[in-house]
Image (cartoon, rainbow, N blue to C red; front, side):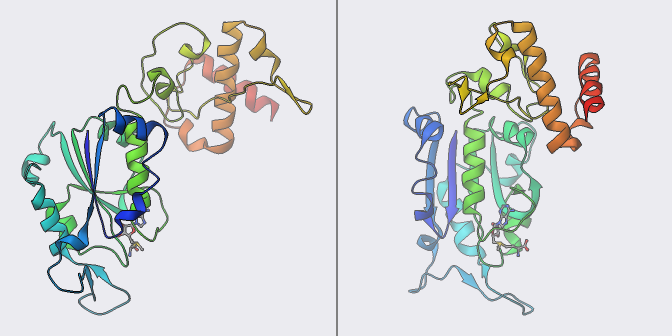
Length: 268
Ligand code: SAM
């Protein structure tokens, strides 16, 4: 996948995209990330990227020209019409608190793209003509206001990259994570039967088995895969009920899930 990030603070990305899975994906060529300085697309000596809002009011707004010209300079980004057609493999995304909220389903959709362009706003936001005529969609990373789109862009790149086949060594590990609704796992063992199915992930423990008197649940060290699978499902259900009960309304619960939930509720 080719990713282009448009920003007035290109140095912001020194670091967040240089570690772990994203770094490996860049090194192996799975993902190519290019950062574009919008000031390079200004024409005045002050390299002005913002201006006061028409109609008055607080703050400054990012001007449309540098953003349009930066995107146009790529040459190989399809027309907006083509990008909006079914099955298009390119998308131009404006980071915005007013956008559709990023979730694992949207991240999975984006991971199938060949080209993703991320436009980072700043100040009071971006001239609305970017959303009206240039971007294909607006995406928010959550219901809060950030100072700029750069953190949001880094979040999107991270969550999308790990869903690209080959980015994570063991692909099963991304398929059984929190929020993942549909996934087919391969291989044997207890974890392969524990796809989250839209729930939160089950708890994980590692050595030592006893840390300062805090012991790992006995079931995890007894080697009984059926019991481990059932325990993981039950603890995932319990955690989801406690922290994100809204998710339980959306997932398709099996008869076993309903029985486990009844046991959990009976205890509380
Ligand atoms: N006036 C805008 C509003 O009330 O919605 C907020 C502008 S914000 C201070 C500046 C920029 O940060 C936005 O243009 C956008 O690119 C980015 N931003 C802020 N919150 C965001 C969020 N939740 N998700 C993604 N980007 C966000």
